[in-house]
Length: 402
Image (tube, rainbow, N blue to C red; front, side, top):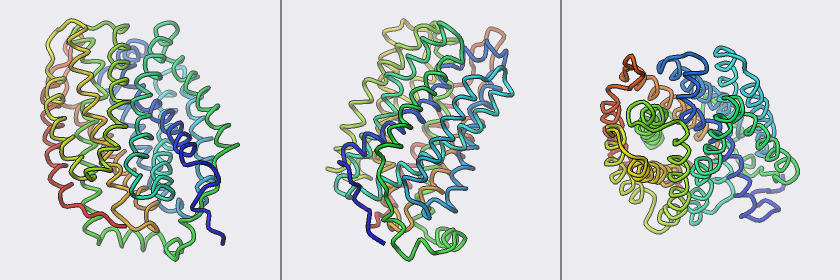
């Protein structure tokens, strides 16, 4: 078989396509958080029921990643991406037409199922094609899509939700996804280098057994589990807290995400370069330690004017995003290339499972009063800070594999 490890397009254009995929599937996930106040009113649901909407996406994404584990390294990356992204587009159209809570929950389930696999495929392509010495920079550029989703996608979605209803952001996402899908169909290259080793003929259960006896793999999975607990116990409930406790209006939320996103677009790219210069573990440890203060702060904010809320949340989003660039770069380097797709499938499943668990934990800690204010959110911050410290400890024991 002829090697196709080097795609017939520029590395920059390939990274741009991966960033576009990441932008749409991240927007699909993060748009739920700022819409929480709107959805609770439109669907007459509680904070706990909103938590179920977020959790079902993450649990479905975990299931999708596990399914991918058994198949992902047996197919050309192009074929896999086109198939999965088509399913993702259809799922978002279902979200856009959902008439009520149960239908919407089912649509979110399908969106999560395909979104979880997209995450695996993006990181697998980076690991397959981008040399180790440039992998941090590439990961930072692709993950800057998280920030771009905050800068462009979330404010646009909130404006549309204000003008129309909660369906409008998902129509916007469906249109954007269709445009990205057409580009992928026309331009995404065949990538089969991962299929050219003996490893792709190993039965999946044998690979799973191999992982379960590999201490470095187990530490890596624990590391990413803790990091997701540290982030997604807090993030889905921030907008609800800002509206019902801090005193922002739903129209002011878009400024929070716009400013936070703009700051993290820059910080993600800079952190990616710093990762290549200083090393993955050292960069992660520094970013994670710094993130503890803003996590603790945003979960106990009192009523404040908008300008101060913006200041606290910009720092929070910058630190939140900064941790994930070195962390995900490190995750692509924990196993041999022949096992990368399978490992990242398991890793993605763990990430999504941890996100769902984090949301459920926070949902049970948070209590709403009669006016809708959230109580005990500060304890959620304690959970997040503790998980951050534990992730730092585990990261120091991870080993990179060429």
